[in-house]
Amino acid sequence: MITIFNKFRMGLLPIYVLLAILTASVTLVSCSKEDELEIQNNFPFEVNVMPVPKDVANGQTVEIRITIQRTGNYNNTQYYLRYFQYDGTGTLQYYSEPSYLPNDLYPLASTQFRLYYTSTSAVSQSFDVWISDSFGNEKQITFQFNNSD
Image: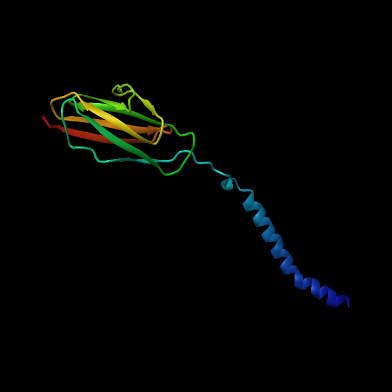
């Protein structure tokens, strides 16, 4: 009777060894630092602009509709705007706020907004708008208007 029991125990030995190896490997893998939870807060974005007229007259105002398309959403991300006009003259403003000053950084209240460009020039005008976020991602948009006078 003892020999049957010993044979039975010996037959289970490979199963016990296999279970011990599996338990050890699962324990080692689950303790790995690579599996730590990473919280991503830096999401790239794209900027969509509705079409604008090609021509603008001196004193005319053009509406520019802009939407920031995020690839992810981190609630604490702040977006900013700055612009620089390199041809002609004009003013750029957010809704009825005071006009922006070139190269100054302005916070944006939302990811969908309208800018208003008013021409003060009798020649063609060109300016760039940069949209950036609080993580250093930045997109540049170039606007060019021919004079329609």
